[in-house]
Image (cartoon, rainbow, N blue to C red):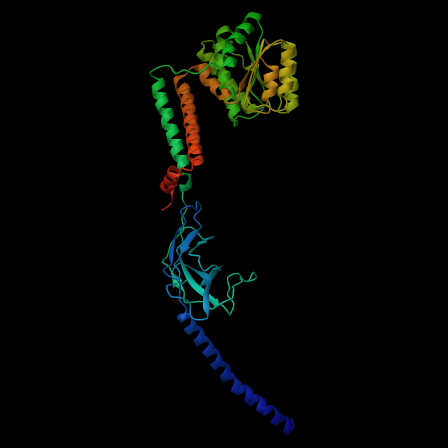
Amino acid sequence: MSPHGARAFQPAQRRRGLESPRSIVTAALLLACSVCLAQTLPPPGAVTLKDDPEDQKGGKLLASWKAPAAPAPAGMQLAGYRVYLGEGGKTPDKPIEVVPDPEATETTVPDLKPWRGYGVGVSAFYVPAGTTFEPDEAAPNSLPETAPESAIAASKRASPSGTWFKHEQTNVLVAALLIVFVVIATITLARRRDIYIRPIAGLRAVDDAIGRATEMGRPILYVSGLTGVGDIATIAAMLILGHLAKRTAAYETPILVPCNDPLVMAVQREIVHEAYLEAGKPDAYDPDNIFYVTDSQFGYVAAVDGIMLRQKPAANFFMGFFFAESLILAETGATTGAIQIAGTDADTQLPFFITSCDYTLMGEELYAAGAYLSRDPVLLAQLKGQDLGKIAIFALLLIGTILVTINVNTIGDWFMKLIQVQ
């Protein structure tokens, strides 16, 4: 290396040696200034952390704090808060959220592990007066250099846990308890005296249909819909079948029950067999009269229509949930001259049954048929209790509508205070 080159190199090396301590001093001064600034910036007030009472899974905590007690330093203004999280006994030092609202006093800490201990810290950050803070979408939990933050105010530890009770649905619980109380009261009353149930034309015609089939020596056809045992309409249809079979057993009138579901067939066989036992005619029971056809919708309808045309039953019963096949079944039965009684809660099929059948049970009349036919005091009491509950709900809705219309909200405000989460 030439002497000139060495001389040219040595000053540069010396300059770098001098700049290194200078940069360290500068960084130290900046750090000291930032620490002093953080100490002079007013921090948030007391920070509290508690379990979210409405969190059923147990993975949330509610953090709340108070606004800084001291005003912002000259030339600065409060822009919001930054929330830190610490797990276990660790100091909250993991930034999880920036709340760019100086008036905010609470936030939800999600995605936590149940029954683990957590701590939360909150710091206030400031911006120069007259400016606004815009969160960085790429780093939502970070702050720019122009937004210094105060010291972190920490909370006590808390653990998230699940809850089994939703306080905002207390009114539903109260209503359910009232209905249960009414049903129990009506059951007690029904065991002491008779309960009046309004006559239902379709159910009053059941005895006439059975008598007509007995006189003509023809069977009765019973269709319990095209849904499975889990459907409420099918369950109601099975209850009606049991009472119907008990009455037909006394006259030894055969009842044909084609099924499109094997489970429904098995249950209906047991129901009819039990009905024949209670009627004292176990020998008259024929399990072949309750048979499986197919699970194909229109294949099943074609088979049932064939039974109608070949055996010409004197009475047809269509009870349960039906689909597009309802009109095909009812029209075919009408051409044979049979008495037809239908019942369904499928409102789209009611017009077809009303047009083609002699009697139709609409909606809840299908569910009430079991109690109406058996006259069992417990079933009648349950039916009566449900009706009283519906009347009470309608009365409350009417009273509430009137109070809101005339701008009287005292009762509503009182009830909201009653169920408010403390």
